[in-house]
Amino acid sequence: MLSIRGLNTHYGSSHILQGVDLALPRGTTAAVLGRNGVGKSTTVKSIMGLVSPSGGAIALDGIEIAGWQPHRVARAGVAYVPEGRLIFPDLTVIENILVAERTPARDWPISRLLELFPSLQARRTNKGSQLSGGEQQMLAIARALVSDPKLLLLDEPSQGLAPLVVRELARIIRLLRDAGVTILLIEQNMKLAEAVADELHIMVKGRIVYSADPHRFRAEEEQVRTRYLTV
Ligand SMILES: Nc1ncnc2c1ncn2[C@@H]1O[C@H](COP(=O)(O)OP(=O)(O)OP(=O)(O)O)[C@@H](O)[C@H]1O
Ligand SMILES: [Mg+2]
Image (cartoon, rainbow, N blue to C red; front, side, top):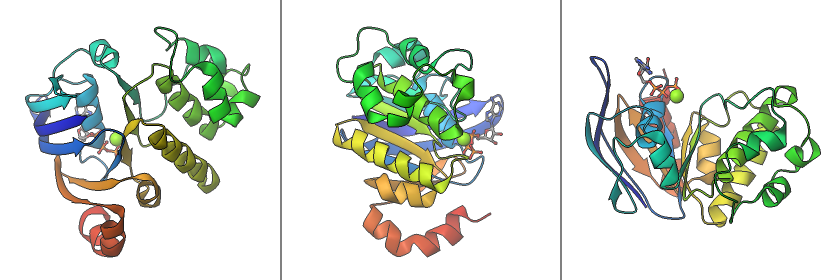
């Protein structure tokens, strides 16, 4: 589904992504973990076309999309939930979702989204600014789903959420995966990543340096943490 090879991205003269390789089979969830500033968000922004890579390949179902404009990447079936959620504070829950609907949703119509997210159902006429952090995160995911994506990019969805809400988030991510959505999850929360991912990757200085399935990851967790994740 998604195949990234030798991806390089610069911000001016700063060389941030230094050859990212990542393969994400259809219907699976991959997590990318890493310390602050290693290039996790830059990776998803490069996929989405929000920053233009300076080299390497990004293939979506065999089609080369590196360097495409974001709207074109979106139309090709990629949805992006940015760090910090960026929902519209003055629009209601329903309006926030509907602005993202390009054509009537087939897989994820608003009725199904409200079933999937009971907290949004209860607050459907509330404004974005009146939602809790967890509700805003669920709304950001619902807004991404209404475009019926084949690939969903989630950038640190658990950031700032209470443990109970993180558990709800894990339930949602597993449910989406089971419904066939391919998911690339950027996380700092190792437990969440372990709970939902089919494969875990560690990024250090703009490269993937370690990949494992959850079983092996759990067995090696302590070494991985000390070696790659502790500041
Ligand atoms: N627009 C930009 N212009 C210049 N430098 C940037 C820009 N955006 C990010 N950077 C730098 O690129 C590096 C990687 O940033 P990125 O946001 O990808 O990190 P990250 O792994 O997502 O970190 P975090 O865990 O803090 O979200 C950092 O050193 C950051 O300061
Ligand atoms: Mg980031």
